[in-house]
Length: 326
Image 1: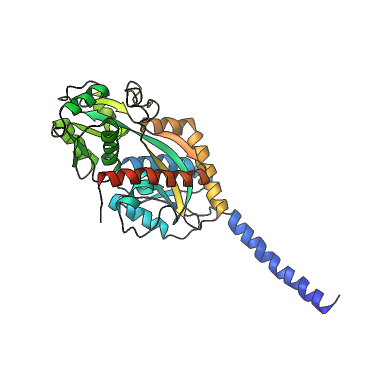
Image 2: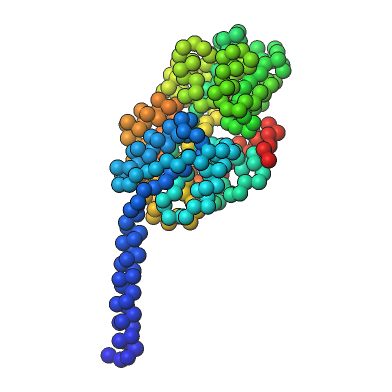
């Protein structure tokens, strides 16, 4: 054996433990708790969704999933926190439609890019909305409401949780599709907006189903239609927009999990597979449907494509509404 052969053999022997250690390090993920960032205060729909997922993920991954609340700026603070986190699989973002598809058009000076600064892991749910009116509105269904709005242009108001949010943009889409003119009144949150709808200060509102379910069942507001392609299990007696005569109208929000860009592909795939298992669980499905959500897993690649497609769609709605937040 030549001196060169000896040196090469020694180099291989030295490299083997390092390679094995690296492999063991990757295979060990996760070996500590995982932080899931929620960009909204506790108690809201995104938090509820995050709690369901985190509880079910823990036994699959073998680690605690800790919720970390970074509320503010329509979820942008939480999104930015994750975009700048280490891409090691231990920091995740649970995001809604606004964070993934609206805010990039609404806020011209975001400190991060969506989705380029993230590694999409999985879409987790679709979130249909429901349109409601207060009991003073004479219309009993969507067809009657459209006729009533057309007969009273500019005399009806719709309330929203704030400029540029889904509860603002969906009614703007409805106005375009139905040829009606209804005045927008933005509030600082969906709860006070709903209070004024029930009190008669605004006539109409549209938002995620859980916000309204109890009030619909107790008769405090009247549901006209859901915005999904099929009826919601949470409100089986409420027709869709399509069934109500507004052909081709379907507006659905979505939730998903993202990691920082650069997170190793094998970790992203392991997380995505774990979420697929969680969303196939009958107990998870029942809990999400009670929340007004529909389990809707997508792979990382399909989810990334969905974000881009939805950004174009909601971006057009933002432009048409004229909403901008500096």
